[in-house]
Figure (cartoon, rainbow, N blue to C red):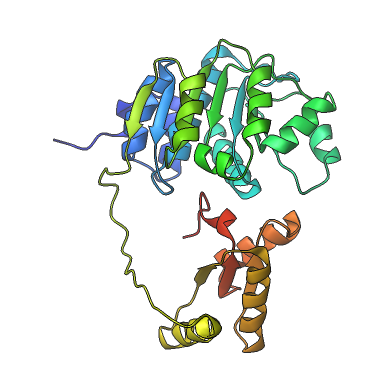
Length: 315
């Protein structure tokens, strides 16, 4: 049986041109399962891990629906994408910008998140927008300042819903849901479904199409896993030894706390290993620069808290 192609999913010619021009021909499992019912207007309940292609799975139907309905660029967007972290907001925004370039009618995508000045974001929203990609706190700040409203939202995407709840955004999320029109399409993506996420999904979804690709053959990563028992006082020494003997060119190290991220990165720099911490107390400019330098191999080691554990696209 020949593999399914993007041309089999019911996408409009402009979006087919967008995926083809960016080198995509064969949709992933989550894209095959989610795009057709999403285009048909059905709610989606998807269990999909990082690397499964879920961003395109909601971005393509979202853009197609907007194109068919016509864009408005008012103070109330037609589509809202909620994400748990600033970095993920930027990545989703970049994907939407990439795919919307070939659309016959201009679609404005606004990306808003905290940790930076709110004024430029307010100015950017003055001319209206079609899609808002947001972290919850900054979205509520903008609503409180009358920079935008949610009265016209027809499509809601929750991306990495479990992380949103893990990071303590449940109350903010409930405030946002209360501001949305009751009649809307909901696309819900989460890597895991603990009780809180299940309860949230049951609250907002209406007869959803269920997509579960965690066990699908999306290609098992070529990873060797090891567990090494070591005295706590010698952990960083062992890390230095492994970096040297294994000749690792880029290393992502996870630690439990922001303080530990700073301490471990500092210890590595003392022995001339280019390392930087990555955690929530850094300025947005610093976080962006660390990821940019890591992707460009200017930094060898990033020592991170679990805020870096989901959604980051680092080849």
